[in-house]
Length: 446
Ligand code: GAP
Image 1 (cartoon, helix red, strand yellow):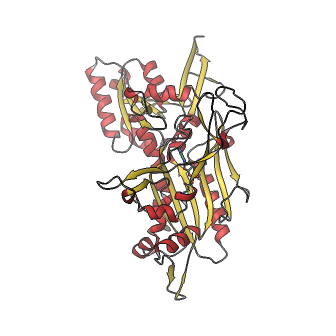
Image 2 (cartoon, protein in one colour):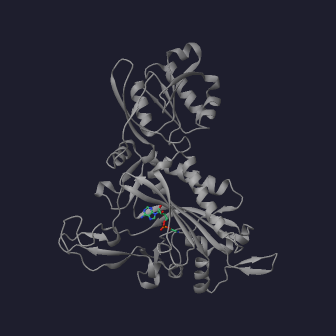
Image 3 (cartoon, rainbow, N blue to C red):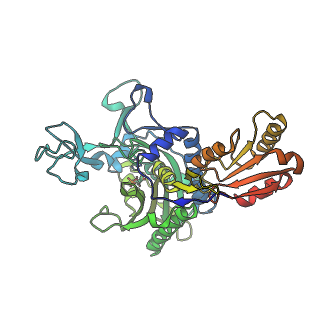
């Protein structure tokens, strides 16, 4: 049996290298030199991100009877962005270094008088507002009448549809509307791999509660639920914290706010924001559109504007978090005194892109290959599987590096005893399991 010792954690050179090598994430338009702030998910990355989104959707929508799903358009009426405040206020302060001509977000500068790239002192231009909204044109005319934006958050699509949803889904507050979708922000300084990007996906839950004095309890409940969500998929608790925003840090209308932060290799970074937004959003859309979005309560025969609790998580950041959190480099000496090493991703089985790899120990033995292929085909209906064959040591290393929890090997003994070897990714232990019982065994383990 192999045993391993553990080493210090990951650097930000290792993650993009592994992501590229194994087909998780590639630079967008790489053959043209790439485009800053945009990334493509390869075969394993696409499944990984889908699993993260599915886990969120399952726990936030499907397993609850008080949340409904939603999917609004990316392009909305430009007035929606006027009402939301984005047109007037969704800015970052930008400065240019007059010496090296590089551009920075003013609030990201460690020393507001010194350029972090060329070291020049007092060489910055005055900070000026830079809109994060990505403009586009709808229809054949590129004039201001046709101008609108790619959404910078998915939430506004939910707010403008609040009445449509509660009436058709026959929901009364407290209830929530959830959606996952693309958002776009023209970030001044995208960076840290997929952490700060210009095109990303958000998973947003807008939970509407009556103004009956229980709104803060609902906020606290969502904070606790979101805390439990990250823990339930194995995110290390020491690398996760919930930062409570001070009144100065919150928007003026927000009664409470909590940021979920993860300890990335470069320091703490925001994964999600949870906020008590009062009635601000519905009020703003009612004012500009002139339409009544209040809830009509049949029991009291009265209209009221529900209070909003929002949980807004970035799916690219969460996917990156799962990748970083799962990463481990291990070195050890085997039973014969030979030094060995591996890179392993300890993904939760629900998150892992491949759950079971099935191997034939030899490529050139049709009876082994056929047995292994048959087992893999049969397992496909209930698990995410992959078939491979060849050198067993190399096969294990490859699956460890993509985070496959269990490997099943058909070997020469299989032909005699109708059993396969199941190898555990984390413990690196092996056990023999009969082919007849492999389905039940894997269901139990995964
Ligand atoms: N509707 C509320 C809202 O959008 P936010 O704090 O601006 O709140 C929520 O964004 C989440 O969206 C963030 O916590 C982050 O995970 C993700 N996010 C925001 N900007 C991002 C960017 N440029 N790149 C990747 N993810 C981003």
